[in-house]
Image 1: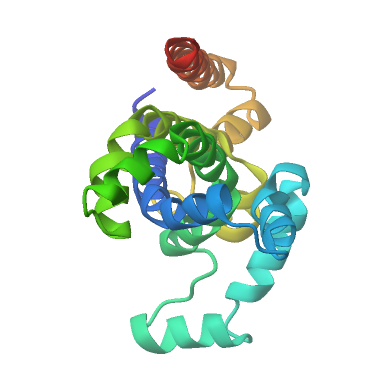
Image 2: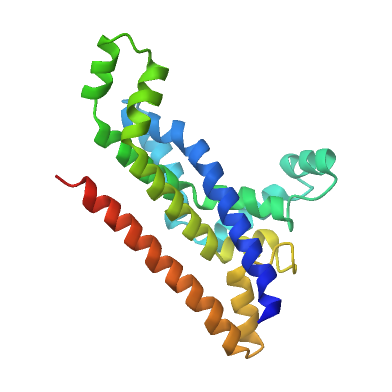
Length: 221
């Protein structure tokens, strides 16, 4: 039982970093998608939602190729940090940001759409500029969307398997997260620890869904 804790803490760290960073990245994207009438919006929407339909192993394979030292991104990272982006915790973070992006963008986009234009127009008549309109009006009204985005991206990152296996491999203490630890335990017939870890992920998933559905119920008229 003790030997599974490194994978647990590594997964929690990865999920916290990913979900927190995604709130920053997804905010301007979700805001633009909720308000833009650009002809490019359907294409941006499709690219943003692609991880929802693309098999994780396919996404993981292309990210592995992209992160390798033979490609510009991997080369630049190796020169700056001295370590490869592939098969590292940093690589897992970047991969998780891409893989979990729609789970942060979609709740925020819906929350911004629910805000509507009337409160922003009212703030504008009082002299608020666009930045003030967002931070003093839209952001507080969309706080439930931010909570939903955080818990969904956290839970999704916590349970991912295909992408992290392709990009990070199975390195103890560095890239071996909970889902990979479960796979290892099943392979070695250690069903006791496999049950313990799987049950933890199951309870986490149920809790996340309860939180999200509770927030949705509160915003209904």
